[in-house]
Structures are given as structure tokens and as C-alpha cells.
Image (cartoon, rainbow, N blue to C red; front, side, top):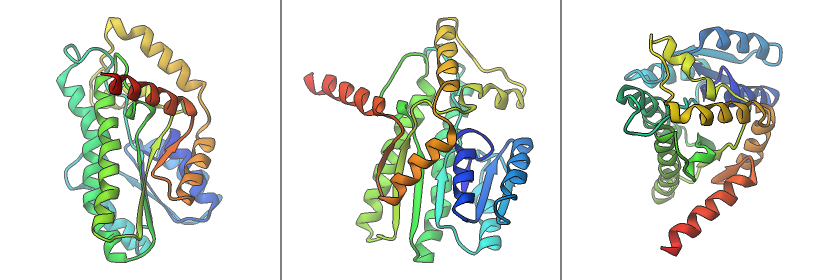
Length: 263
């Protein structure tokens, strides 16, 4: 079960799963690219279920999981990957509606998904794994991207708490991981397309224009999504809680931690 499957990291993960002969349930609001992905994957495996949904809608995961269980009978691997960059600029300037949108896509949808899927996994009493995709900016901070960082730091904390809750409940058949992609080729910097579908324009403050251009360039120059998926699955195989695509994240987090501890 992969959210945000139609492009970027989600697409790379989908191909990795297909090459491993997993049964796929692919969720995305981008119908065109979702169908295109399914057509490509069907040349590898017959087990491809596409679910065209807006994951921010209330009770949508109840509908989604019912369709997956009806098709496959169970869910063993959940990848909460869907995400948007959100607006660019200082928190006091960015439109509140776009902050809400960012939080709903990146965080609230993950909470809703876990609320629906974890009980199913418990009931299955089978080996399962949950991956919540955070970010390099889920451990460090920068200017110009408050909404995104709020959600990704929350994903980090929530997943750590999820692991501890599972351990406390004696549910040792469900393992969890937090994925911290550095720069990976994706549509993250092109999140404006989702707002355009809602007749809105992504806010980019004048002070954040250069930052937006730099982020877009670095994302386009990042590692490819298949390589990111290979790294992720190597970590899953070891039941790693923390999975990184680059040492820069560890180095920057170490620097941040040392600054905190010096005070």
C-alpha cells in the first residue's frame, strides 16, 4: 500500500515492489500518472490495484483499505509517502489555507491512514512493516519552508512514538521505519500543480524566490527514485527505524543537536 505512488519516490518504490513480486495497491490524486504507472507495472506483475483518491478527505482510508482487503486479503507493507512542499516564505506571510493544506496532506492523512491500517495489521497477526516518509527537513530546519518542516518533524516524532507504542503493547510483528530522503528526483518542488487543480496558486514570497529555484535545481539533480527505493528496502530488511539516503542529513542533524546542547 503506497500513497503518493504516481510520481517521484512513490513511483520508484512501486517499481521496487513490483520487481520483488509484491502485490501493489497504489494511491494518488494524479489520475493520469497513476494510470500510466499501472500500465508500466502490469508488464512486470499482474497484481496492480490503482486507487484514485484525495487522501485528505474524511474517512477516505476506510474506503481504500476495504478495496485493498477485498482484492488481496491483507496489508503487510504500508508506505506513507504522499507529500507536498507547501508554500514558500515566512510563517507570518504564507496563506493559512495553504499551511492547512500542507498539514492535511503531509501529516493528517498519515494519522488517518495509521488509524485505519494498524488495527488491520494487528488483526492479521502477520509480519508487517510501516514506513512513514519524513525528509532531510524532518530533522533539521531552514528558512522559507515552515509548513513543510512542521509536518516532517511531526512525522519523525509520530513514528518514533508509534514504534514505542507497538513495543509497549507487545505487538512485535509490526515494525516501523522513518525514511529521510535528502535530494531525490521527484515532483515535490512542483507541488503547485495540486493547488492549480483547486484553482489556487502556490505562494512563493519574494524573499523565497531564490530558495525555491535552488530547491528545484537540487531536487532535479538528486538521486533517482529507484536508487532511493533500493536504499529504503535495504533498511526495511534490517528493521532499521531510521533510514537515510545521504550522510548530509546525519551531519546536519548532528550540528543542530550540538547547538541545542551547548545552550
